[in-house]
Length: 524
Image (tube, rainbow, N blue to C red):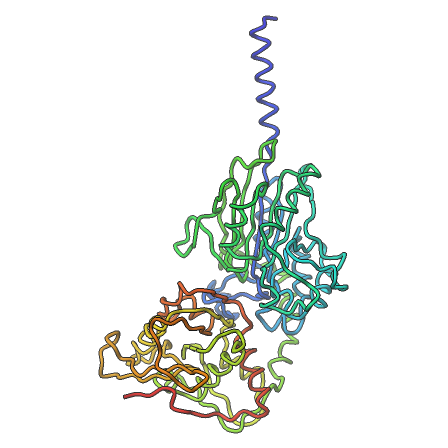
């Protein structure tokens, strides 16, 4: 055999070896599910059985079961992971806490999950119960839980799983300010995400693991920072910011995946509306050679798994008890008629705005703005049930806090009164704020005047150049009802408690709520 032929055969053999060394993996992922076991509308609120039958609904556990099974059939190696915040967001969580989430995630066959801030909403005890109930690891690298007996030795920073004979490292990451966002207790301290991730990467690498995925509930911006400032991270499955990454959806914030160096970042919006599907190929050194995919929309074309649908329907039956639960009382009827609340100050508008502001007043927030379109009913005098509260606020909107300039608030109020003639839902009910408006002035041309903000010394004229802390709901903060000026707000947190829960607690704490008007909105 000639030396040249031998060289050629050796090269072909090396090429074949290199080819077979490539490892393909499908990363299926969800994030910020927030107990949306039932289908939701295009507005992320409840979606009735009739609309669901007509194909108008999205998500729900029954669709996810089908989609996950179909995706697994398309892949030779796959994992299913979650970016946190399975907890909170519907009556299912109020009633079952983490039990139904654990049942559904076990049914779907998850391989790992990070701790979201809402997993701490009811303290370490409920999180531990959830961890004991699931068949997969829950992870959090950037926190010290050694002083918390309930979680010490149980909540790991990272883990290693296997697929196709290859080891895959999973690292958990949670918001550094979780102690301000939830109720983890005084025994847990949170730390810098970059240092925490790098520490676990180094540990896993030393163990011979060269394929590393971070499950991050820290938001799209932080994920990009982690990718840029660490080495050895291959994929970051994100959460917390409810970011839609896509190459086809016009509402996407960035591409899917978003590449930062050699790290692929993915996130799939929220509420089970999408199932993320990232297909990655690794070479023998554990480096990504390709990373492609797209979130799959869970719309009416995705068939609902029958057994899962039946189980969720069964689980929904006890929720009627919550809807019938008496949560407060009203001394008089609370006016929430749309024909009133969408053109002027109304008692229900004051109640909603006051309740939101009261919940976050110790966070430096001084102004509350509620869109009247989110107020859907009045409440009669006497006992108030949770069902009545949910009828007033049915959209499962969450509390949102942010900072904007006084000028932005003025622009927001102008938007709010711009369609009064059409009785539109953008009309702003407020707290910590007073304003006048004049329908004789053309929309957008200065209808708003005499805007005053609450201070420790009473009300003072708003300063267009000053920065103010504002609370609203996530729909308004995200630009709904024309409030696009809030999209670029600073220090945003859109995922507080359900506004309905906030209202119920506020009324309960009042010891018998008396509705009122105080002239905070004046029509000239």
